[in-house]
Amino acid sequence: MEVALKRGESSNKTTFQLFYFLIFFGFGSLFPLLSVYLQEDVGLSGTEIGAIMSISPIVMIFVQPVWGMISDYTRKPVAVLVISLLSTALIGFLYSSVHQYGWLLIVAALLAFTQSAIVPISDSITLNYVQKIEGSYGSIRLWGSIGFALAVLIGGWLSDRFSLVAIFYIFAFILLLSAMLAWRLPRESQAMKVEIGRGMVQLFRIPRFVLFLVTTFLVFGPIYANNFYFGVFIKEIGGTLTGIGFAFLLAAGSEAPFMKITDGLIRRYGTVAILIFAATISALRWMFYFFEPSLTLVYMTTIVQGFSVGLFIPAALQYVRELAPDHVRVTAVSLYSAVGNGLGSWFCTFAGGYILDYYHIGYVYLFFSVLTFIGLVILGMMMMKERRNVPDVS
Image (cartoon, rainbow, N blue to C red; front, side, top):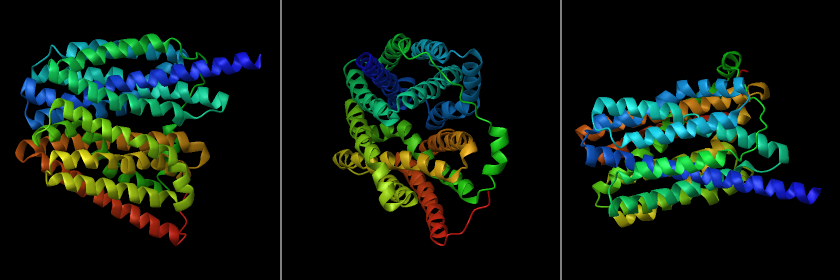
């Protein structure tokens, strides 16, 4: 009996790992090269590209709770997930046939609407599963990073050999495979209700939490916006589409080992110290790109993303959980995600497009660097406050 249970758990874990690999492979095949497609194949301006790319995070802020309510109401998260995957695949396929700016805005908004359900519902199902078997979420989510890294390389190579339109076909095909695999995910689910209204007031009475939301906006915004502009940057300094994929492979691939060691580093040095170190690396990286160095140097420096993003993401989540009282932790994580993934990403993507229109790609990264340095100052203030042991109001 025990052997059968262990085999079942192993099979489920493999299904989860392959599922995460596929959905992030789909994302990685499209989004890093989408700005290049809009610039080169469609001929949009920087401002127009920024507007289109910034739609996704702002739509997600409002739509993700709706998908959550649908999942909770139906008690069928797997079915909702499959519907969102199929819808996203279809809209992604249609994306390639639209070339007018106004219609591109509409299609981008529709894509964001359906796509916004995929990761939260997948994470909810996965967290329920790992809690049940006392497993590790990180060992499953790690395969998403691997899939994303490989997808950009393969998508760039295929785009070089054929056409940039290939990214839409890869995206749609992979998400169709993901939808078929999703049916094999465990059906049991416990509703994860986020009582934002009740927890909001208490959280905003905690000064360090409010300051960290501002820091998240300033540091995470450039990190997520870089996914959209890094391809344009590589092209500007002489890279090919395959080169874009290679750069993303190095960058995203470097995150995995650092995510594994973050817990140990936090225990040794403290959460805020790790956040400061990671943000410093990000700020210096963005500043370095402002000077538009050689392609070789850019490839060499992409691996520092492991030090920055690979450490900052898990450390930030841990810090949010440390700051928030137990009964409002889900609300705290939701707010943190909305500010960083949503508002910060939207603002930096939109502003980056405007800057690209009037200056050049180097100034986009100067802007990212300035924002991150401001976030560093706030983190430094928070560290000084912690060392003085000044209590927060809660």
